[in-house]
Image (cartoon, rainbow, N blue to C red):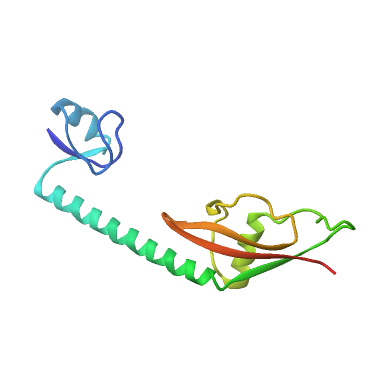
Length: 149
């Protein structure tokens, strides 16, 4: 029996894939658990519509990520840090603080887990942190650490 999988099924196939399975397996396992539907004109058409909608959503997300990357080029946040006698800073700035600063200053949501540069910011100066906004779309976030007077 030909079925379209609604979810990944171990040993059978991945979501939205059309596979051939035994009638008993389909009737007794896949259908009752809503893991698959029987192939028909309607189900194939619904699958095609879902795939087209997913493609459009992916395209829109990529376009939004490219726009955000362009916006980030003109944005910068700065932090004031206490510095010891030898120029060493007390503490460091975390990526969560950078995320919150961008949200408060520019109302831009960036996810701290998407940063490619994971290290703490613990020296005075300018940092250009890379962030993956979408698959293949890299933005640069500018951060400036300066001495607190």
